Length: 192
Image 1 (cartoon, rainbow, N blue to C red):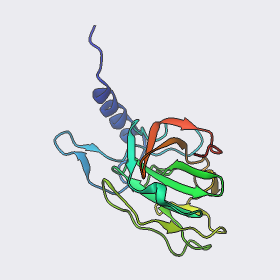
Image 2 (image 1 turned 90 degrees about the horizontal axis):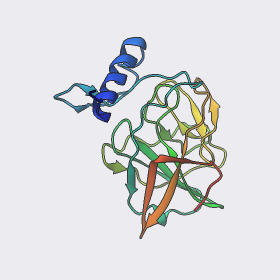
Image 3 (image 1 turned 60 degrees about the vertical axis):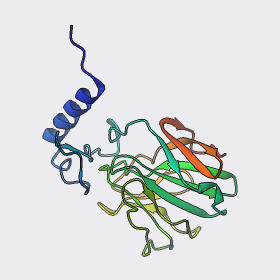
């Protein structure tokens, strides 16, 4: 009996999801992660209520110098359009969230004002944004694709169409660098 490899299974799921969802092929922007196979970095849309969350692959994401964040600051780092994380520090300590919207799998941005009129830009693959101070009245995180917003403190949605919170990920430090494990979801209240 032939068993499908994880890569083959992922391509199959992506192909099926793309054929079922009109949003899948255009919900995110970005280049193709594997030009020879045509595999898109974006996966498929989710209405935020159920289904698989963007097929995010379990990875250990290194966020350089995240331990140097001050209380009230956050930084966004992305590996690609499927795998991105936010490391933030509040009075309780450090925590990490997914930076991929739970509605249509788009890369989110950090809001730095209460109206979210000032946001961070996409840092580009394998990079991070500069640390930003987030206004305590700001939603914290916004999705530029469809306008969803989330609280930075716990990833809870504050405006739709997303209905599911951003997952909170396990976080540890290696010197000044944060190591965020996208394969290990933790309680949103966990702090390091």
